[in-house]
Image (cartoon, rainbow, N blue to C red; front, side, top):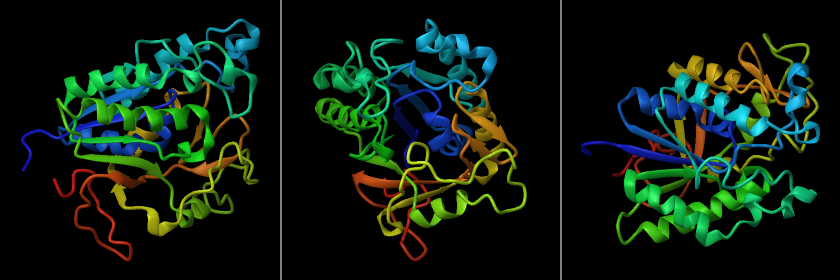
Length: 285
């Protein structure tokens, strides 16, 4: 048995951590594992939901990135996570916007940043924290966002660079089984807010992955309140209503208490159910 479990998560923007891995982070933090979050950008180009904060948009003069630092701090506090860092320091790399937008090519955009420089910065964190497990995205960045794709590349390269000093045993990508996605996007269920739209949007709803590709299922039911609080802390980007949420386009879906992952590298531990899924990111170590 490991003396101390250490988990390092690499996310592209503030709010990604809470939406995709919030229950996982809260669970492991509560169980006494070391949980470190590295966020790659400040999310400066996010769409702002509250009208009273519209002045923070890039078109209106900016300031959103700095504001989201505070939102992220509040979210981490809700999850019980005390070690949060920005890759290369706050503001080193900028939000690149959605794929194909002019912002992709702006100076300082994470998507266009030198891979080796970003990976070296993350490798330094790996050597310091010495995690047994890392979490980021798959090669498609979960839904094709350029910063998510770059986070995947940076994470893989950083793991290689850190290997002479520290070998990360397991690397995971966040995942959403297609069967689960079909359920959480249904709004014809009790408790679904009438103000949220049910039409799927390519922007907010990824296609999911085949169920059989998902290797790991983390039960975070006991930590759903912490996840909801963390998501609500990102008020510029997320509207939380009961156990449902929506982004700026108001396409609703239910918040998942169970979170899913695909093992990209390392030993797969014993599993259960029809797909033999692990129930612990540290399984097999």
